[in-house]
Length: 543
Image (cartoon, rainbow, N blue to C red; front, side):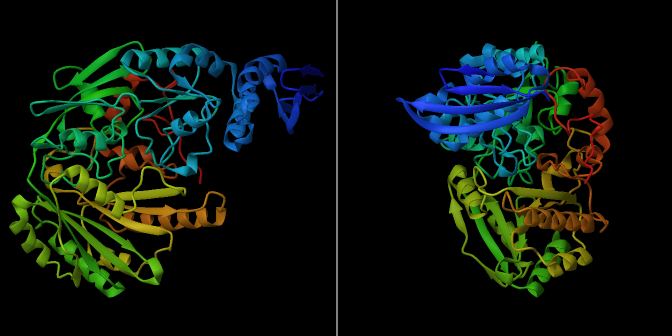
């Protein structure tokens, strides 16, 4: 046993290579807290663990932060599970890092969209200000053999924008500049779409981007990025990319990728998914002339029979809709009642053309059209109405597949489906200008898709029964759609840790070429920028 007088701490080491720590933390001479913890110290050794974590991980307790349970838990995680490599990395990056000792800053820095993965707490979060900082983060991670995760907006549904206490997160939050030059917009990877729409609101341009302003640019565009403007304004967000700037995975180079330079990388970054090839610094996009008004109206089918009617009407008219109409759909069984809603979004320029198409759907009810002159205001209101928020308050699970048609049998299946109260079926409109590109023109392969379908389910973090119910429902629905003959593959931006044969499902015919490019830019087993479902990985889910 030995004693730390600063913390009132006694250490005990047993013969089975476990250690116990008995804490008596005092403030102004009074005892505030008393805890006992036991763990195996393994290869780190007791004195290394003591020096590394007790002196750094617990010293904040003396300044009143011991009352905050979150901070205590994250500090204990660092002490019990971290390693010498991550501490060495922190020593070299502390000038741009936030640690658990900085309670409020750390809680904000580690926030992610899906609380299902919020129990993973990185040892620290590095917040680079420029490309040189990113290079330094990757070089140090490589040198210290420390895993890293990259966070743009933190909206990875599968939790890949965070990591555990053996590694650290590189958050691009400080790199959010947006610069417009003529019809070209350069956006740093830490910006969100709200930053882009705000910068363009007083101009004559609009960008093809996400319908949720809080979503980060980085992961969104690297996964392809479909938008309510995609059908009529040139395709996916990645189709509007003119060039990318990227720090290589080893941190040694800052490279440009365009149609003239590093063409293989340029192709792969347009739909190959985030975290695979390096860290995105910025992207230059072509922006489009914007209309005076954006119009949004909702068509409502308020029963099971009406829902089937509406789905059949959409299926029959899929190839007749003008590309200027975006028609997203949602199907739910809230309050024990089946309801289908169609959200029609279009501009004042194409209003007459769109109205005749909407009449062909024979909606039993529809809302008064809302008009917006600001795309930022429109996307904010649209995402709010759909319940899309910056961070979910409950864990979520999403499983989906793209479909190239909506047959009567599939429409009947959806209408008859007993949708769980905490689940929602979403259909995001594709087609139009997305289909003007071939399956191999970019890394995004599913150009013939008419809709991206997915189940969006919520569950309580500690309610394992509810979680299993959501997973089971989402999987059975996914399987039924796959068996319908209408399906293609899955959207890589809706990454799913339970998806079998995920490489082919996410990337289709482009997967072999992506694997070759990945070997060149970020080989498996080299460096620190890796995750379970990175391109080329042999990992497969076991459940």
